Amino acid sequence: MSKAVRSSSAPGSEVQAFGSQATRRPTPKKLLPSKWTAATPHDGEKHFIVTAVIQPEFPASRIESIELEAVYSRRVFSLSWRDLTDGKRWLQGWQ
Image 1 (cartoon, helix red, strand yellow):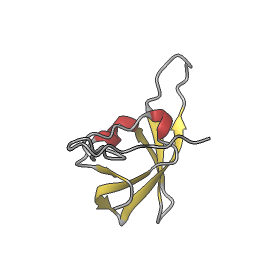
Image 2 (cartoon, rainbow, N blue to C red; image 1 turned 120 degrees about the vertical axis):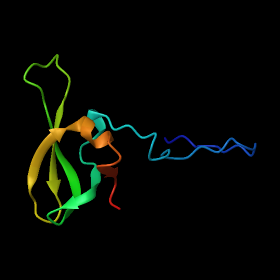
Image 3 (cartoon, rainbow, N blue to C red; image 1 turned 30 degrees about the vertical axis):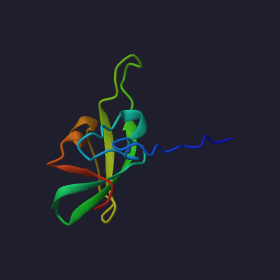
Image 4 (cartoon, rainbow, N blue to C red; image 1 turned 135 degrees about the vertical axis):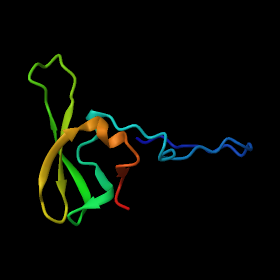
């Protein structure tokens, strides 16, 4: 059973479905398999997919790293998942 979302007709009660680009905060649990666009492409690579969330050595530790795969070249590299919050380097989705 799904819940219906009701909209209010009161002014100012509109809610954006996904929020603005500035208010989105990725979390490690929701990153797999999200899509990202490099704000400044390098070597012709612009579009990327998160292919892995790297688990820490100790289970009590927090997740720090992810693997990104370039869609065009299939090159894979790892970086801190928090780097994706930098709007000057990464844009969520494919743009």
